[in-house]
Length: 474
Image (cartoon, rainbow, N blue to C red; front, top):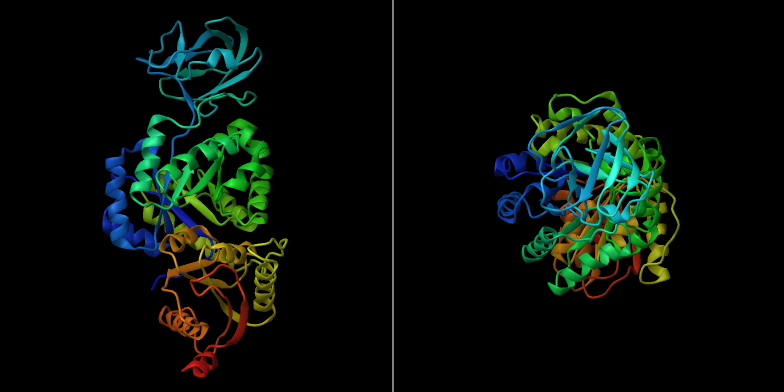
């Protein structure tokens, strides 16, 4: 029997290791969402993963992570060693190989967009350069620390707003592919403003797709524009790798906490990602720093945490998910009854009021589970925002919505057919709870419902002991 923790786990899966047995093991240990990293996969390779995930469980949501707008060094025959004080030249010329005389990068307007004295970081910030001269064709840069320059390495310019297009041809192809396959989420990389989200949404609209967009916040511009990004995104991912380079590592903890708080206030799911159990790529146990890092994200209220290389190509993928689940269980046992956040309107003032009342009642009383029905997922995401100690057992009238809620804190969702009356709804929900061993007949539960599959919005709350609720309706 699979146990239901509240914080969700996103695991990156490669086509090189995606057997049904492997995926089933990850699912049983706590994986909720499968991530496909399109930077390292073709659509054919991704389809292999998708097909196997669906054979394991219809409950597992699938997230496609686009490559997004980025700048990299072009191909280079041999790595070039550089020392402090060396002067090198850089220009934007996609497709042309780098030489010792000229480092070429993948963005053609690189020279035009960068000013004198700008810091340029290569290979995730390992090598730092400073622009000391700018011509029409190239930049002259001083090397600030010894290292080497290699082909296909990342380039970050923290202080510059680069005018890269939001989507590459590969991104567009993968978004259309995701729509064809009826996947659940597009995590779009390097989102800088609402315009980048709109660019993705326009493709989904053209495909008549209901896929939800997760905006990856990994640059200073994205942090600055977080409010407008959240307003039109389904959720966000705090992608800490590039973000730490863009804003500097010492600022990251405060920014992470701020982004999580803003997402919770707007009732949007938030994922914390990058190097959460990085040492477990090679080792069977995490470092204390990694355990504390995960715990801090949980204390701050994240909906989900993400594993990347740990499950994509690491030596201990199952152990990594198992360890993540252990940390989650331990931290969640110490969390307060619920997080008192602002009441936001859903479809009516009544819905928001009833949701808050249900949360407060579940805290004051010895409630085990909250049952809620939902047509769009809004009521359940509102419940999830309070980070209650109680599991939210969501009855969804849409299969896609049931999978989308795999990213929401404390929610276990299942697809059901519309009901003729609320007595039938309560009976069926309770019987499933008992079958899943998530409650017992003498437990007290809270029911938040009203839609029954025909309308949106919550209209009633009912509180009672399971045995009596079933008895009254038999």
